[in-house]
Length: 503
Ligand code: NAD
Image 1 (cartoon, helix red, strand yellow):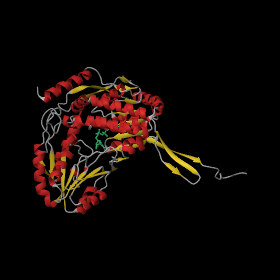
Image 2 (cartoon, protein in one colour):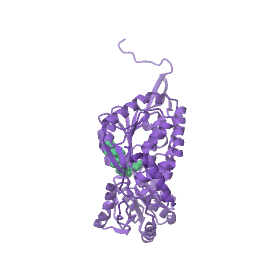
Image 3 (cartoon, rainbow, N blue to C red):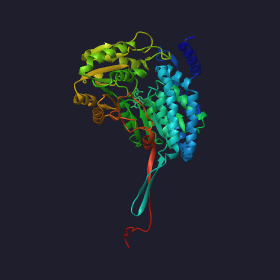
Image 4 (cartoon, protein in one colour):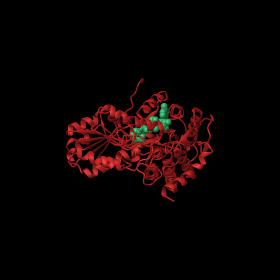
């Protein structure tokens, strides 16, 4: 039996559970079929066949989950940090034990190649371990002495929080939000994306089996405009951590205004990778290919705009085209597949529409440029060359395996093109001139810059974007700044003079 057949057989076994029954919510430590009885269908992008039905959560389901999170908050926040640490480590162990199952389900449900999803599940476990280790010190503050008083700050968890996640690498992204929230002492209501609902349920079950008290992590399935909206408006929810499109972020900010929600947004990107003629071009080529064609290009930090110095444009584009034409498109459960199907027919249509936009706007299609016939959502990995930065393929987030190459003359030109965009998530620079690397890093309006590197994640470092790419930062202590309130306590050291009125 081939590896693909074996993986398919195992995935089928895992989905058997969902074929004949509706995927429920997980509320207050139990699976919960919902209050409306309404459901929606979930399809696999491999051939658009129905995997199963999913409970369509509404405001009442969200209310039940928020009440459970509110009731559980007192006990969870009072648990000593070192005990919370143990629970988070047990969740990490549970993820590792189920890593293959998580990866298979994620791949089949979202179309992301198994090659990348097996690593994503393990990264989810690492997120739990990293923030678990930080739990005992999460409350720590600063000592700020004054002349006659001692000020000191402490942090306390903000309360129940809402976590709303997208469909690209859904499992890993949800752990990236949920692990620090739990480590801080918050309770959570999670609303996963409707196009990739399964692994959120697996996470809730793993956490429950690991001893997370009932009500601390709840998961409500459903559509953004119903369940998601209700979560952002619920008065028990003190903060909303959201990962998704910039327009949705703006909507959530409006929805949360009446209840004064604290928000953390990780939004879209159209990130430049700038390649200078003095760079190590072999390494730059590897990174350019990896950072747009891995994860189906459905990646917020993908370098979807290649800014290439004119002097090396022809040679670099030629080598790049050869690599793009050799990428292996195929079944996501085939361990050799590098590009799988796009998550949903609607997204496939959106990505495919840019093949026409490129032609209309006058770019050249150097590789790919077509949808692949068949029942699944496959497109050819695509390279547009000779583009200008004003074209739609250069300005809009396509979120597929599609790269737009734009030539530039010199350093000033590269910086101007890179910054001429509404987004500001990430930027990548390839040069062997160390001074130039620093100058560009300093000049780019983006939250994260990598010099002579692909996206290399370091959990203590800040992750997040500027401009339309987000508000706030994740990672290390930055995550606690979001999930916790800082309180200052001021104590008089002696008998300083108190103002005396009305004596
Ligand atoms: P999306 O905004 O359509 O949906 C994200 C989530 O929001 C889903 O769970 C959806 O149900 C929910 N939602 C939709 N409308 C809502 C509303 N009115 N109120 C509350 N919730 C609502 O995004 P998507 O298409 O699922 O994901 C792709 C996007 O995510 C891309 O733009 C990508 O760049 C972005 N993303 C950003 C990062 C980052 O770190 N900056 C990481 C991953 C993905």
